[in-house]
Length: 307
Ligand SMILES: Nc1nc2c(ncn2[C@@H]2O[C@H](COP(=O)(O)OP(=O)(O)OP(=O)(O)O)[C@@H](O)[C@H]2O)c(=O)[nH]1
Ligand SMILES: [Mg+2]
Image 1 (cartoon, rainbow, N blue to C red):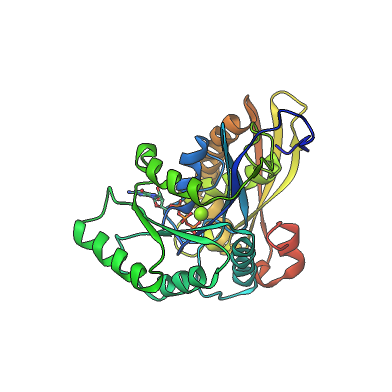
Image 2: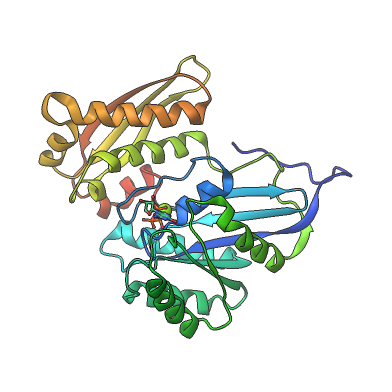
């Protein structure tokens, strides 16, 4: 999905252009927001916290606007080496940001992690801070006010918008505010480009999303996906991936009785990959025990979770 832009072209577009970092607690709807803005399901989304594990660039272009959204892991207190990598990813996107878009979920009372989010946003002095109070479709007026007053106190300069990431129309005033806050300049990417990620990396995240849909308790957090083969020149596109878990008992859960769980994961992932690849896909999945992978830097690098 990457290409090198030829910015020397005389008709190369200019306008409001800049980086927008998505900052928020886990599970507030950052990746959902990005997918809705892009009109494509590229970022993994789930009902479980800590779905996003690494930086993801989503490029949204209009005739004279290019917003470079940086989706990032949710802000939380790291418990292991993977958590540290995720925290570094958050800090990195903040250094790149022209705008920090804080996303908050009013259906849960503001807590410790919201405090961290607000402190990080307040510390990003180079950037304009905008607050999206998300999930307004599911929150009461009281809950929305509680969240707004918490964030207004911590970041008084932030422009506040009430939105639902599930409803694109509700995002338009917010996108207009972000546009106004961006600097002027030439587009940094071709207007047709939607991300700088490789298709296989997006694919790995979508396979993990399918796993999160079908797994519960500690297993989703103990699972990582590595792509072993991505043959996109063949038709159907041939993809093989290994699902790494930490313990033998988790392997049994992922496979399920008579292979029913892994079959359901495979079907859900294949449907997503078909859309991503724009045609039929054959997906083969393997499950492997990689003890303590969340603490092992070599494996974190292999799984592309460490910079
Ligand atoms: N009702 C409602 N649900 C939403 C909205 N936005 C997101 N969700 C749901 O909230 C859950 C979390 O969404 P994600 O987009 O994965 O959240 P995230 O902030 O990226 O989470 P992490 O990657 O874990 O930091 C999913 O079940 C979404 O469907 C919204 O506006 N309204
Ligand atoms: Mg996410």
